[in-house]
Image (cartoon, rainbow over all chains, first blue to last red):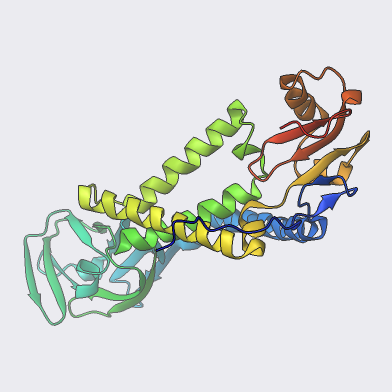
Length: 179
Length: 151
Protein backbone atom coordinates (compact mmCIF):
# COMPACT_ATOMS: atom_id res chain seq x y z
CA UNK A 1 0.00 0.00 0.00
CA UNK A 2 1.50 3.35 -1.11
CA UNK A 3 2.05 6.06 1.49
CA UNK A 4 2.05 8.74 -1.25
CA UNK A 5 -1.17 10.78 -1.45
CA UNK A 6 -3.03 10.92 -4.80
CA UNK A 7 -2.06 14.06 -6.67
CA UNK A 8 -2.98 15.65 -9.98
CA UNK A 9 -1.65 18.61 -11.97
CA UNK A 10 -3.75 21.74 -11.81
CA UNK A 11 -5.71 22.24 -15.04
CA UNK A 12 -7.20 25.55 -16.03
CA UNK A 13 -10.68 24.07 -16.22
CA UNK A 14 -12.76 26.92 -14.77
CA UNK A 15 -14.02 29.42 -17.34
CA UNK A 16 -12.44 32.87 -16.96
CA UNK A 17 -13.91 36.34 -17.30
CA UNK A 18 -11.79 38.71 -19.43
CA UNK A 19 -8.94 36.16 -19.23
CA UNK A 20 -8.37 37.50 -15.77
CA UNK A 21 -10.53 35.84 -13.16
CA UNK A 22 -11.63 32.19 -12.96
CA UNK A 23 -15.36 32.33 -12.21
CA UNK A 24 -16.91 29.41 -14.08
CA UNK A 25 -19.83 31.49 -15.28
CA UNK A 26 -22.03 29.81 -17.90
CA UNK A 27 -24.51 32.42 -19.05
CA UNK A 28 -25.91 30.20 -21.78
CA UNK A 29 -26.80 27.52 -19.23
CA UNK A 30 -28.22 30.15 -16.87
CA UNK A 31 -30.51 31.53 -19.58
CA UNK A 32 -31.88 28.03 -20.19
CA UNK A 33 -32.34 27.58 -16.44
CA UNK A 34 -34.20 30.90 -16.09
CA UNK A 35 -36.52 29.84 -18.93
CA UNK A 36 -37.10 26.54 -17.10
CA UNK A 37 -37.77 28.46 -13.86
CA UNK A 38 -40.49 30.47 -15.61
CA UNK A 39 -42.16 27.27 -16.79
CA UNK A 40 -41.98 25.80 -13.26
CA UNK A 41 -43.57 28.93 -11.74
CA UNK A 42 -46.43 28.74 -14.26
CA UNK A 43 -46.96 25.05 -13.43
CA UNK A 44 -46.86 25.72 -9.66
CA UNK A 45 -49.37 28.57 -10.05
CA UNK A 46 -51.68 26.27 -12.04
CA UNK A 47 -51.37 23.62 -9.31
CA UNK A 48 -52.42 26.21 -6.70
CA UNK A 49 -55.38 27.38 -8.80
CA UNK A 50 -56.53 23.79 -9.32
CA UNK A 51 -56.18 23.20 -5.59
CA UNK A 52 -58.30 26.28 -4.85
CA UNK A 53 -60.97 24.94 -7.20
CA UNK A 54 -60.85 21.57 -5.44
CA UNK A 55 -59.28 19.46 -8.19
CA UNK A 56 -57.16 17.79 -5.49
CA UNK A 57 -60.01 17.47 -3.01
CA UNK A 58 -61.66 19.69 -0.39
CA UNK A 59 -63.23 22.15 -2.82
CA UNK A 60 -65.95 22.90 -5.35
CA UNK A 61 -64.78 20.43 -8.03
CA UNK A 62 -64.47 17.61 -5.50
CA UNK A 63 -68.04 17.80 -4.22
CA UNK A 64 -70.53 15.43 -5.79
CA UNK A 65 -74.17 14.43 -5.35
CA UNK A 66 -75.91 11.27 -6.47
CA UNK A 67 -79.62 10.49 -6.20
CA UNK A 68 -81.61 7.31 -6.55
CA UNK A 69 -84.34 7.49 -9.20
CA UNK A 70 -86.93 6.20 -6.71
CA UNK A 71 -85.97 9.09 -4.35
CA UNK A 72 -85.14 6.67 -1.56
CA UNK A 73 -81.69 8.13 -1.05
CA UNK A 74 -79.46 11.12 -1.97
CA UNK A 75 -75.73 10.94 -1.34
CA UNK A 76 -73.47 13.97 -0.89
CA UNK A 77 -69.81 13.05 -0.96
CA UNK A 78 -66.38 14.12 -2.16
CA UNK A 79 -65.33 12.38 -5.37
CA UNK A 80 -61.73 13.38 -4.62
CA UNK A 81 -60.50 12.90 -1.06
CA UNK A 82 -57.09 12.89 0.55
CA UNK A 83 -55.14 10.11 2.22
CA UNK A 84 -55.63 10.04 6.02
CA UNK A 85 -57.69 13.24 5.86
CA UNK A 86 -61.22 13.35 7.36
CA UNK A 87 -64.13 13.57 4.95
CA UNK A 88 -67.89 13.31 5.48
CA UNK A 89 -70.27 11.27 3.34
CA UNK A 90 -73.87 12.35 3.91
CA UNK A 91 -76.82 10.14 3.06
CA UNK A 92 -80.21 11.90 2.87
CA UNK A 93 -82.97 9.34 3.18
CA UNK A 94 -86.34 9.97 1.56
CA UNK A 95 -89.80 8.95 2.78
CA UNK A 96 -89.73 5.73 0.76
CA UNK A 97 -86.65 4.57 2.68
CA UNK A 98 -88.62 4.16 5.92
CA UNK A 99 -90.30 0.81 6.38
CA UNK A 100 -92.01 -0.16 9.65
CA UNK A 101 -90.29 2.67 11.47
CA UNK A 102 -86.85 1.48 10.44
CA UNK A 103 -84.31 2.23 7.72
CA UNK A 104 -82.03 -0.53 6.49
CA UNK A 105 -79.01 0.97 4.76
CA UNK A 106 -76.48 -1.27 3.06
CA UNK A 107 -72.94 -0.03 2.35
CA UNK A 108 -70.17 -1.85 0.50
CA UNK A 109 -67.10 -3.11 2.32
CA UNK A 110 -64.82 -0.56 0.57
CA UNK A 111 -66.51 2.24 2.51
CA UNK A 112 -65.40 0.62 5.74
CA UNK A 113 -61.92 -0.52 4.66
CA UNK A 114 -60.31 1.53 1.84
CA UNK A 115 -62.24 4.71 2.63
CA UNK A 116 -61.70 4.12 6.34
CA UNK A 117 -65.12 4.70 7.90
CA UNK A 118 -64.45 5.90 11.46
CA UNK A 119 -68.00 6.24 12.75
CA UNK A 120 -71.64 6.38 11.70
CA UNK A 121 -73.83 9.28 12.84
CA UNK A 122 -76.34 8.58 14.36
CA UNK A 123 -75.43 5.31 16.00
CA UNK A 124 -77.30 2.46 14.22
CA UNK A 125 -79.52 0.06 16.12
CA UNK A 126 -77.61 -2.84 14.66
CA UNK A 127 -75.08 -3.70 12.01
CA UNK A 128 -74.89 -7.00 10.18
CA UNK A 129 -71.87 -7.98 8.11
CA UNK A 130 -72.46 -9.90 4.86
CA UNK A 131 -72.97 -9.74 1.08
CA UNK A 132 -69.70 -7.86 0.62
CA UNK A 133 -70.72 -5.07 2.93
CA UNK A 134 -72.56 -4.09 6.08
CA UNK A 135 -76.27 -3.62 6.64
CA UNK A 136 -77.06 -0.88 9.14
CA UNK A 137 -80.47 -0.57 10.74
CA UNK A 138 -81.64 2.81 12.04
CA UNK A 139 -84.80 3.65 13.93
CA UNK A 140 -86.69 6.32 11.99
CA UNK A 141 -89.50 8.29 13.58
CA UNK A 142 -89.52 11.18 11.14
CA UNK A 143 -88.49 11.92 7.58
CA UNK A 144 -86.50 13.13 5.73
CA UNK A 145 -83.58 11.97 7.79
CA UNK A 146 -79.83 12.03 7.40
CA UNK A 147 -77.05 9.58 8.13
CA UNK A 148 -73.39 10.57 8.02
CA UNK A 149 -70.25 8.50 7.62
CA UNK A 150 -67.01 10.01 8.91
CA UNK A 151 -64.31 8.77 6.54
CA UNK A 152 -60.53 8.79 6.74
CA UNK A 153 -59.10 6.96 3.69
CA UNK A 154 -56.30 4.53 4.39
CA UNK A 155 -55.43 3.69 0.79
CA UNK A 156 -54.56 5.88 -2.19
CA UNK A 157 -55.96 5.52 -5.72
CA UNK A 158 -59.42 4.90 -7.14
CA UNK A 159 -61.94 3.30 -4.85
CA UNK A 160 -65.38 2.04 -5.86
CA UNK A 161 -68.21 1.98 -3.34
CA UNK A 162 -71.92 1.29 -3.33
CA UNK A 163 -74.77 1.99 -0.95
CA UNK A 164 -78.52 1.92 -0.92
CA UNK A 165 -81.61 1.25 1.11
CA UNK A 166 -82.46 -2.44 1.28
CA UNK A 167 -85.07 -3.24 -1.38
CA UNK A 168 -84.37 -0.05 -3.35
CA UNK A 169 -81.95 1.07 -6.03
CA UNK A 170 -78.25 0.71 -5.24
CA UNK A 171 -76.01 3.72 -5.93
CA UNK A 172 -72.48 3.17 -7.25
CA UNK A 173 -69.74 5.77 -6.77
CA UNK A 174 -66.06 6.20 -7.56
CA UNK A 175 -63.81 8.10 -5.19
CA UNK A 176 -60.22 9.01 -5.91
CA UNK A 177 -57.94 9.16 -2.88
CA UNK A 178 -55.07 11.63 -3.37
CA UNK A 179 -51.73 10.66 -1.82
CA UNK B 1 -42.19 2.33 3.30
CA UNK B 2 -44.45 5.40 2.95
CA UNK B 3 -42.02 7.48 4.99
CA UNK B 4 -39.14 6.63 2.68
CA UNK B 5 -41.19 7.44 -0.43
CA UNK B 6 -42.48 10.65 1.13
CA UNK B 7 -38.96 11.64 2.19
CA UNK B 8 -37.66 11.09 -1.38
CA UNK B 9 -40.50 13.09 -2.95
CA UNK B 10 -40.22 15.77 -0.26
CA UNK B 11 -36.46 16.07 -0.69
CA UNK B 12 -36.60 16.57 -4.45
CA UNK B 13 -39.61 18.90 -4.28
CA UNK B 14 -37.89 21.00 -1.62
CA UNK B 15 -34.68 21.02 -3.67
CA UNK B 16 -36.60 22.26 -6.73
CA UNK B 17 -38.51 24.87 -4.72
CA UNK B 18 -35.41 26.29 -3.04
CA UNK B 19 -33.53 26.19 -6.35
CA UNK B 20 -36.15 28.22 -8.23
CA UNK B 21 -36.79 30.61 -5.32
CA UNK B 22 -33.56 32.40 -6.34
CA UNK B 23 -30.15 31.94 -4.90
CA UNK B 24 -30.47 34.42 -2.07
CA UNK B 25 -31.83 32.03 0.60
CA UNK B 26 -28.53 30.13 0.49
CA UNK B 27 -26.40 33.13 1.25
CA UNK B 28 -27.83 36.38 2.53
CA UNK B 29 -30.95 35.55 4.47
CA UNK B 30 -33.31 38.39 5.13
CA UNK B 31 -36.00 38.02 7.81
CA UNK B 32 -38.62 37.26 5.14
CA UNK B 33 -36.39 34.53 3.70
CA UNK B 34 -35.95 32.99 7.14
CA UNK B 35 -39.74 32.67 7.30
CA UNK B 36 -39.82 30.87 3.93
CA UNK B 37 -37.07 28.40 4.85
CA UNK B 38 -38.61 27.46 8.22
CA UNK B 39 -42.19 27.33 6.94
CA UNK B 40 -41.39 25.11 3.95
CA UNK B 41 -39.29 22.84 6.18
CA UNK B 42 -42.11 22.49 8.70
CA UNK B 43 -44.69 21.64 6.05
CA UNK B 44 -42.48 18.98 4.45
CA UNK B 45 -41.86 17.35 7.86
CA UNK B 46 -45.61 16.93 8.41
CA UNK B 47 -46.07 15.15 5.07
CA UNK B 48 -42.95 13.02 5.49
CA UNK B 49 -43.61 11.68 8.97
CA UNK B 50 -47.41 11.46 8.71
CA UNK B 51 -49.13 10.07 11.79
CA UNK B 52 -46.29 7.66 12.63
CA UNK B 53 -44.33 9.42 15.35
CA UNK B 54 -42.19 6.42 16.26
CA UNK B 55 -38.42 6.64 16.59
CA UNK B 56 -38.11 3.97 13.86
CA UNK B 57 -39.97 6.19 11.42
CA UNK B 58 -37.88 9.25 12.28
CA UNK B 59 -34.62 7.30 11.95
CA UNK B 60 -35.70 5.91 8.54
CA UNK B 61 -36.63 9.41 7.34
CA UNK B 62 -33.30 10.87 8.48
CA UNK B 63 -31.32 8.03 6.86
CA UNK B 64 -33.26 8.48 3.59
CA UNK B 65 -32.53 12.21 3.47
CA UNK B 66 -28.87 11.63 4.40
CA UNK B 67 -28.43 9.03 1.64
CA UNK B 68 -30.16 11.28 -0.89
CA UNK B 69 -27.86 14.13 0.07
CA UNK B 70 -24.85 11.86 -0.30
CA UNK B 71 -26.09 10.71 -3.72
CA UNK B 72 -26.65 14.28 -4.91
CA UNK B 73 -23.17 15.29 -3.71
CA UNK B 74 -21.60 12.36 -5.56
CA UNK B 75 -23.52 13.14 -8.75
CA UNK B 76 -22.48 16.80 -8.51
CA UNK B 77 -18.79 15.91 -8.26
CA UNK B 78 -19.03 13.29 -11.01
CA UNK B 79 -21.11 15.30 -13.48
CA UNK B 80 -20.46 19.09 -13.51
CA UNK B 81 -23.63 19.71 -15.55
CA UNK B 82 -25.67 18.04 -12.82
CA UNK B 83 -23.92 20.32 -10.32
CA UNK B 84 -24.92 23.32 -12.42
CA UNK B 85 -28.55 22.15 -12.40
CA UNK B 86 -28.61 21.66 -8.62
CA UNK B 87 -26.53 24.67 -7.54
CA UNK B 88 -26.46 26.90 -10.62
CA UNK B 89 -23.28 28.56 -11.88
CA UNK B 90 -21.57 31.68 -10.54
CA UNK B 91 -22.85 34.91 -12.08
CA UNK B 92 -20.85 38.06 -12.69
CA UNK B 93 -22.91 40.98 -11.35
CA UNK B 94 -20.40 43.80 -11.78
CA UNK B 95 -17.65 43.78 -14.37
CA UNK B 96 -15.25 46.74 -14.41
CA UNK B 97 -17.80 49.43 -13.70
CA UNK B 98 -20.60 47.77 -15.69
CA UNK B 99 -23.61 46.28 -13.92
CA UNK B 100 -24.65 43.03 -15.59
CA UNK B 101 -28.33 43.95 -15.63
CA UNK B 102 -29.72 40.66 -16.94
CA UNK B 103 -27.91 38.58 -14.31
CA UNK B 104 -28.89 40.97 -11.51
CA UNK B 105 -32.55 41.09 -12.54
CA UNK B 106 -32.89 37.32 -12.93
CA UNK B 107 -31.01 36.59 -9.70
CA UNK B 108 -33.09 39.17 -7.79
CA UNK B 109 -29.98 40.95 -6.57
CA UNK B 110 -29.60 44.74 -6.57
CA UNK B 111 -26.81 47.24 -6.08
CA UNK B 112 -27.45 47.48 -2.34
CA UNK B 113 -26.77 43.74 -1.91
CA UNK B 114 -23.44 44.12 -3.69
CA UNK B 115 -22.52 47.21 -1.68
CA UNK B 116 -23.46 45.45 1.58
CA UNK B 117 -20.87 42.76 0.83
CA UNK B 118 -18.35 45.37 -0.33
CA UNK B 119 -18.63 47.20 2.99
CA UNK B 120 -17.73 44.02 4.88
CA UNK B 121 -14.47 44.06 2.87
CA UNK B 122 -13.76 47.67 3.78
CA UNK B 123 -14.81 49.10 0.40
CA UNK B 124 -16.72 52.37 0.50
CA UNK B 125 -17.88 53.00 -3.08
CA UNK B 126 -18.65 51.08 -6.28
CA UNK B 127 -15.54 52.57 -7.88
CA UNK B 128 -13.42 50.43 -5.59
CA UNK B 129 -15.00 47.21 -6.91
CA UNK B 130 -13.63 45.58 -10.05
CA UNK B 131 -15.76 42.44 -10.06
CA UNK B 132 -18.75 41.32 -8.03
CA UNK B 133 -19.77 37.68 -8.39
CA UNK B 134 -22.85 35.88 -7.13
CA UNK B 135 -21.51 32.53 -6.00
CA UNK B 136 -23.29 29.16 -6.19
CA UNK B 137 -24.00 29.19 -2.46
CA UNK B 138 -25.76 32.56 -2.77
CA UNK B 139 -23.01 34.72 -1.29
CA UNK B 140 -21.46 37.64 -3.19
CA UNK B 141 -17.70 37.85 -3.73
CA UNK B 142 -16.11 41.22 -4.47
CA UNK B 143 -12.71 41.83 -6.00
CA UNK B 144 -11.07 45.18 -5.38
CA UNK B 145 -10.23 47.37 -8.34
CA UNK B 146 -6.53 47.41 -7.58
CA UNK B 147 -6.09 43.88 -6.29
CA UNK B 148 -6.48 40.43 -7.77
CA UNK B 149 -8.57 38.63 -5.22
CA UNK B 150 -10.71 39.34 -2.20
CA UNK B 151 -13.35 36.77 -1.02
